[in-house]
Image (cartoon, rainbow, N blue to C red):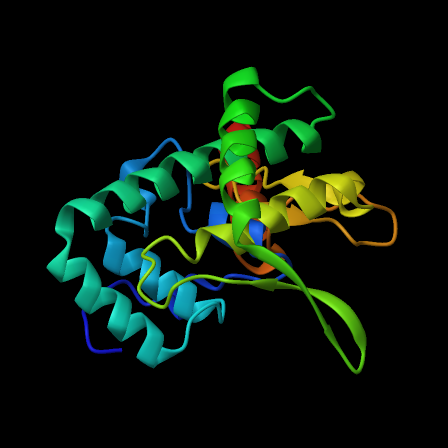
Length: 208
């Protein structure tokens, strides 16, 4: 990678589903300071971390983005809006509520756009979907993200969607625990912090 951007390997994305990695590119959607996705270069770095692009492909798209900054800015704005919409739809599904109409409309508009890049191809294993984008298409990483969100919403994964209950985290994850009672994206991070806070407040409440 021949450009500067956030190193998403440090974010600890779980790589459960592509759309979850996308919405979890921020630690908390209401806090801009917790956002790791701040530029088109960051979008490329995220795409590298989730294996949507090779390093050479990311470098080529970065070069294209420098040559066409207005287009790159528009793609980044689209990605930012799409991430918010997918988060709203997935978090609504996690709470078994209908999705916000505006968020669903944004996702549907994106779906109508990206479907034009899907082709059904055949190989020895049978037929499969293939994404067809120009190598210089700055928005090529968004098609698989949109499709992933649709797949999650239409599959058994929908019932396993959860939003982390950490006070400073709203990561979306799949609860595959035996009794489906997982409350935090990670017991090692948010879970331990929640336990530490409870212990602290119990200690403060104990009479002297």
